[in-house]
Amino acid sequence: MELSVGIENICRDFALYMQNEDFKSHLHYVSAISSFPISDMMELLPLQENETIYESINILSSVDLSELNKCVRSLYQRIIFNPVPKEPNTDADAHSQAGIKTEAEQAKKERHWICVEGLQTMFQCSQLRDPVDAHASLNDTMLRLRLLLTKCPSTNVLFLLPPQEAPAFVESLQEHEAQTSYPHHRRQGKRFKRDNTGVLIGDYVWKYYM
Image 1 (cartoon, helix red, strand yellow):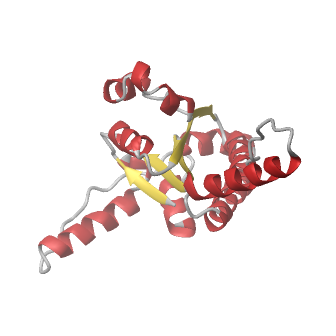
Image 2 (image 1 turned 45 degrees about the horizontal axis):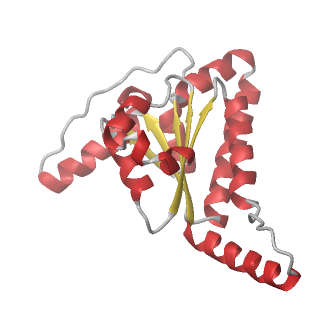
């Protein structure tokens, strides 16, 4: 799993991922705060020339952690237990061999990228309803994603965050950059205030799940 802050060209990364012909790529975009940047994507990948790619983009909405948990459970089932497509064939043996071949090809070539945006908004909504359930839903979601990555290494999980939702993570990146560029000087990173929930979910996820 990865955290990324302040990404400006995420559509470029999406396009490069989906265009890789060595894999059958699937993009799952889960958001609480915005819609999928389809217009930016179509500038990079025109729809008429890339219909197959757009058929493999799955857009999901999640307003709180309970809904995110349901989305992740659904994706887990879809990715781990993806059924092998059957082809009509009157010859049972030929049909069986075709099924095995299709399954092998699918296991080799399919890959999935799950992108989650708006985690802080989801957490705040859940926190207002039930703080205990909010943490339980977050923990179950993150552990299920971790299990998914273990069982299906070709899957990527990315959390998109603005810098103010993961200040400790941003500071660690700044310190690493400063040590790399100027080993004898430590750069003072910008400090952010916590929101009204008292929890910055980006830092929490980075600390306990990454």
